[in-house]
Image (cartoon, rainbow, N blue to C red):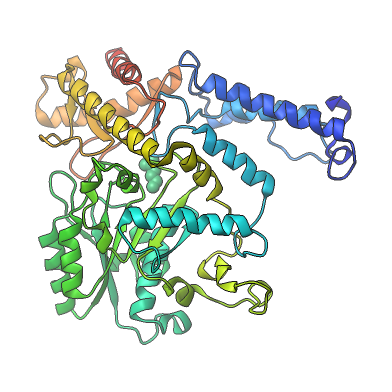
Length: 498
Ligand code: ABU
């Protein structure tokens, strides 16, 4: 049937329900097969091809004439076959891993409802849902939900931008209308191990990337509060106006938590906006056993928290939360009267669009709401505690397996779900330090390339300012078992020694 049909011969342009159902059922079959295969450990994570070969394996051109529906189904199969199965239990490459099927069902519904989040008028249930979900998040942070505010943003980098923009607005509301004219030279602070998006926000807002100062971290990757305060004082002496400091709760590479209480004290003393980038670590607030790592977060003016990371919501799902209600509206409101008419037949304060810097806004809340309902608070507590147990297990295995070396090693480690390590193949174990360093630089990329060729597993690597390339293991997929972690260790040894 599908071979003889094109898109305009099914709904919505034709009343052909039989053809419509057949097409959608075939697509669902393709997706179900993908989900089944992805959870089969005997199936590969990827079929790696270089870009020139990949171009030849799939027809990516846009045709002059419509293609039939069967061809479209086949294209869907090809796209999934040639992609990377990021939900595979042995994909450890990114902070956002796994495929929660309830969240995915939520995304399917979201796509079907296909509405925009700018007004209550066209998204009444989803707008109320955002408030209900954010209430849980505000409570988890430790704020009064009656006074807090927030917005779902397209990713953590934009959430951080929202926070810095609001901070500047609070200090210098004239900047909204006049730009940076007549404003003192502002500056902000973040740790050297924080996410690059803080610097990027400083650049985008016209403050300047060079006026976002990197504060040194200790050997565990945590910001040194004394260094922050010294830099603030130095900046003031130089005539700059410090206005914003960012702490990271769960740094991207090491998973470190900055000392929030101590930085909050400094921000209070110097009247700085205190932002916590908990994009990665925010989910830890849902575990009473591990929440203490974010003690002091309730003193923040703003918090970035990405449920698409630790909580496992489908991409993208990222929130910027504010302790003080009203500021987002003041800061971003443009009062477009084709959308945000004030004489609508309902309470227009529910139109969230004028709080946002974007106009069209994707519905990111439904998949989170549905998933959170499917687990409850208790389910998340168990999920996060289980991941932390696995992180402890993996760290122990790394310590006891010959050839592996942890990057950060102390008694309270692992603090989180990032485990950074080297694998040192037997043949280079006795080299002089300089020679060893040069050789180590090439080991992680070589092993990673071997994994991708085999298609068996994936884990990220990077150097830092003092160390040659090392692996960054991330344990965030709820499908991971101890056997998967043992498999990764075995695979690294096998490829590293070959
Ligand atoms: N903030 C995006 C982090 C991406 C990753 O390291 O997985």
